[in-house]
Length: 469
Image (cartoon, rainbow, N blue to C red; front, side):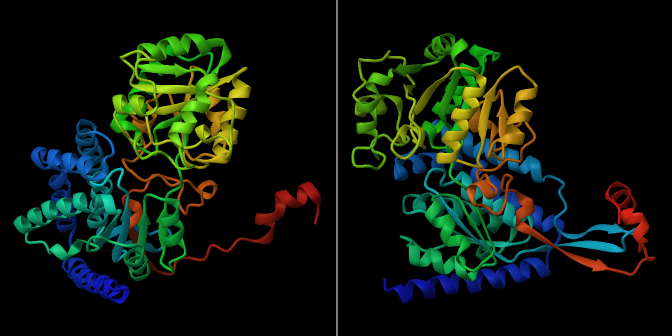
């Protein structure tokens, strides 16, 4: 299709979305917004539909595995619904007599969401639910491999809307096969651009002229210090690293282990299915992982047996191997193991002591992944706070399976999300997990109150007493 034809199609989608959103807002209520969000949530959580979406996701993208995608679709959506239950997003939010300010919840309008192939059902569902909860319409632009899954998800949502009488134009997607031109046009026309995925798309969103929320690159580095519960750390790391074949941006990419517990930790990791690849063999792994300077698509997010076969490790590591940890000491562009690998492969660093482990972690994050998150397995209560005060990161995940914890969990207080803001370190406009609050704005009605103008003495007396006038 000609470029102008693509743009015309996107223009028509946005017109329909604006009309639907205007009615959604003018005829809105908290009950209606909540019902629409619940419809979208049940569209992905209903077990048979969840299974169909998970199967299609793996079939069409070749990434991850069905069982874990079913779990992800369910738990991420359930957690989100828990987070937004009872949250006011319609009408008067607060009325403060002391300030004379009344705050009223208002939708943003039409949201354009660019979503990745790594989570082609869970991520768009998360965005859709948040958008509807706050009175918005939303248009998805999936990656080419994620088109089929997004189409099916929207079909399921529209089927739920048919039960409630809601307008299907509230949830739409860019017509397949999609293109950068169509995505860019969408980003330019909507009221908020939300982008999860490639940093190229994030930059496009920020340069579109539309208010935008993008997320930074992941490259999670996890420290195991000399005080850690070694068995628990190995178990959690293995569970996280292998979940959905490491498709998550929150999957551990580098393990930094303090020398005092290095061998004990590797023994525990071996018991959990993690095989050590010695540094002498690292170059061969790198050559097969990046055969032409780019990550080998035949190993990205594949099952363990496929990974081992492609890396030439079949028969060279235990048959129980679920992932590999490759010893290295290199960091930076000439050492690709120190970057994101999107596979059941972790870089393994041996640190002299805890301070050296922190230094290695800082170097890795400075190279790639700044702002996103890091992990620490420890029993020292001071070290997490020190990392939070010193490191270029928005999240320090303590004694948890990283990919389950970073995007919100039932046993931590982060909001459930599949999109993690990385602050200024990651070139993002937000530093927290993308959640419902980012899909709503507020109008403030401001009334006069009694004057509270202070004297200069009240403001400056302490300063004057310290340095003089």
